[in-house]
Figure (cartoon, rainbow, N blue to C red):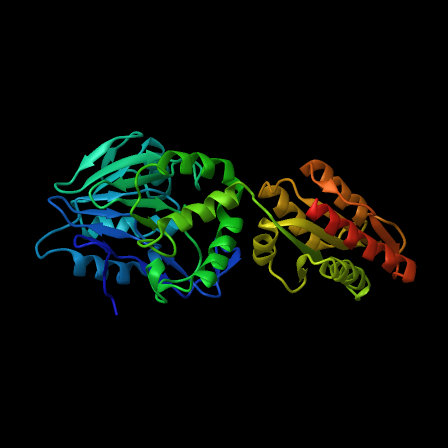
Amino acid sequence: MHSAIPLTEKVFWVGVNDHETDLFEALWPLPYGISYNAYLIVDDRTVLVDAVKGHFLDEHVNRIREALPAGRSIDYLVVNHVEPDHTGALRILRELFPSIRVVGNKKTLELLAGFYGAGGDTHVVQDGDVLDLGTHRLTFHLTPMVHWPETMMTFEASTGILFSGDAFGGYGTVDRGLFDDEMDLAFFESETLRYYANIIGRYSQMVQKAIAKVGTLGIKILAPTHGAVWRTQPRVAVDWYDRWSRQETKSAAVVAYGSMYGNTQKMAERVARALVDAGIRTLVHNLSHSHASYVLRDIWTSRALVLASPTYNTGLFPTMDDLVRLLENKLIKDRLLGVVGSYGWTGGAAKALTAFAERSKWRIVEPVVEVRCAAGDQDLERCAQLGRNLAAAVRA
Ligand code: FEO
């Protein structure tokens, strides 16, 4: 029930699976849960690498006690990332293991003091510093903004384990298999991409810098704070993050629409049909039903996007307004955009979508289709033409 899982003879997974939280960051759905991975290194000095969310302390501590040799305590806690999903247990861990010395960089310790109060033993490290444990040797690599400014990664030379923090992580608990060779990778890729688009994507440039920095370390095992531990093909996870952080897209389209009475939906579906007829893989989201988490995931790897919105109180339909703000917040770049809008007595939606494209420097593919009340045959033919034009632009 509370088994610690060995990565090597002396390194153990002592994390937890969270099936209780509905929304990660109180925002993003977790239908398959999430894991908070933590690791214990047993050597002349024992090290806990990252911890867990406070609610799961009991399970976490049981696993730590199982992996610790009799009579030993924890000497160091390496905090690669301060966000409370990895440090919520800190205060109680300090009480249970008073010998703990917290290892982090200057920003780590400032943020920890802000969240949990100052105090306790600390050990400040800088980029490239080394901590010798006996047989194991930790090197600290600062990787800011993946996902917070204090974020760092820790490399253990004798085993080739990179403790990478949020980087290379994904949604989904690891009770379905902790290691990459135990997992359904197609399922896990989808949930990892969703995590990337929701949480890390805004910081893609910093992910590129981090990959350049740690990519040459000779990683044998990739041990992030969420999701699979990669012991067979760590290169696969690095390649996923590399492609996503370069915002590499496929010849695919997403059609996202809001519709109160089905009129805008009819136009969106006509564009989608034309895209499909032209051979473009197309995913359609009704924003009143699809959570933005999934829409962002699909947009992240698609070259084209169609946004279709009614005018609502002179602006965008609220779910579309939310999506557009998220697209800007996540710094999604260089997409082809089809714009479809409708209105009853005064326009607004198409203008707002066009303004979004200009701010984001996305290319609008013509025609912009804006219809009063309900689309007639000619309007629907313009929607089909938009779909055909987008398909051609995707292929160009
Ligand atoms: Fe998993 Fe940014 O915390």
